[in-house]
Length: 97
Image (cartoon, rainbow, N blue to C red; front, side, top):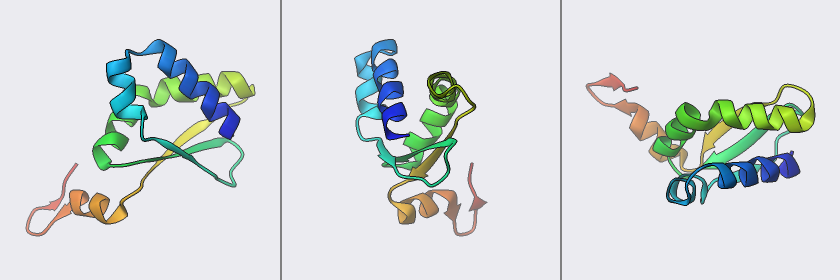
């Protein structure tokens, strides 16, 4: 899957403006996963995860599926889990979306 991710990343780099690509995909890392139909990436923050999911998940999954000849799904994890948890829960306010 690492090679598939590299191809998808190259596709995105040629498709979206550099001023969008660099800040949102510059620190994205591929992470190994034992699931054969999943591209697992690690992002630096919850906003990164939300933005990529909202704006590019469909494109990433479609391109990866095209390359592999089967359905591929994207899984995004946040590197700093403590920060991610803090963003999801604030005492007295419950979970935020």
